[in-house]
Length: 356
Image 1 (cartoon, rainbow, N blue to C red):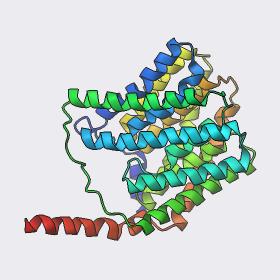
Image 2 (cartoon, rainbow, N blue to C red; image 1 turned 45 degrees about the vertical axis):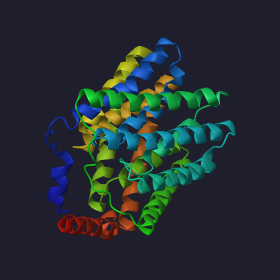
Image 3 (cartoon, helix red, strand yellow; image 1 turned 60 degrees about the vertical axis):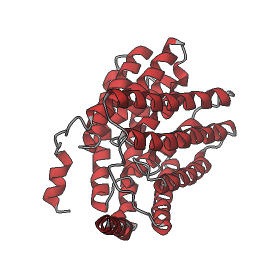
Image 4 (tube, rainbow, N blue to C red; image 1 turned 30 degrees about the horizontal axis):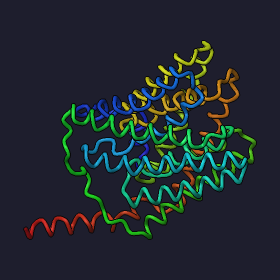
């Protein structure tokens, strides 16, 4: 990609087409916000992290018609519950340090492999790392059944809400908007191995540097590799770093005001909504809101007043994004791997359609 095009894409914000971002943003923000508010009414802010990971189910099949989206979200919901279960197991057995990085990198790569086979979107191990390592990093409550039930209930609620809103908005049953390619297992395995090695290196680097949340570096690396081409991955890495730095400043401003749990809840819903409005059009702009979203969720589960956690988030994200970009450069590019897995099925589809 030419330098002038990089500069242009770094700052451009394409216009929204036919509420393509607004409707998913409303659905996802409500999926995150309603379970969160219910737990606050029950006086259980520390449990909101479990419903948040369940609500991530709503992120999948974002712009698909109703029926294909339900299928994607059912599969992703199962994977998210399993990830939280793995995180609870690791937390209960006090797995930490490089062992935690190694286990969660491997497990998330396996989940990403399954997701690619099922053609789930968004792709990559980002949310699986976030769920498994995030839960593993908090103290074990001793109530795994309750915690897993909250995650499953939140995932189920996201699915149900999506169906109800889909009917109200007349999204219809439809078929997937993208013809699913018959992915070769070799190519899927190559992408999976790239994800595993890159996130593992990012996590180990964060751990060796003594940073407190090494999985944030892993998440940043995974976010970079989720882009569809090498040039887009480099752009994603730059966006992630710039957006995180600005997002940390936004978070610091609100934390300095000592907000209570209800204020934090409102900020989470707003940040989630705005993230979804921009994430498909300018990732850097979305990252400004992704950062406070993640940190506010941590704050609800374990309130903090020190700015040390904010600087840790910034440094680990920059570290992970750089490692992710290096991984993108040295690994086979996704567009090269996908040449015979996308073009050939499309040619066959056109040939069969012509015969009819």
